[in-house]
Amino acid sequence: MDIAQIALFIVIIILAIVFVALGVQVFFILRDFRKTVFKANKVLDNTNTITQSVSAPLSSLSSIASGIKAGASFVSLFRKIISGGKKKHKEIDNGKQ
Image: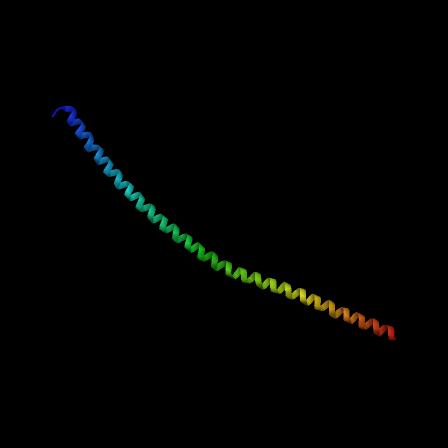
């Protein structure tokens, strides 16, 4: 074996060791990335649950507020009708006297 073959053999062995080390590192990086994606998915699921639990009472509160507003307008209309009837009744009483 001459010097060129020995040098080439040594370079090939060194490159093989480097590629194996890189492969192991890529494996660990991908495994950590997978764990991170699972954790992010759990966080998003929890965020979705929290959002739904907050939005449900707010929507019912909005419905209650709409009901109160409608009730207030009905009461206002009812008061106008009653006060209008009283005014007509007073005008009729004042006209008879």
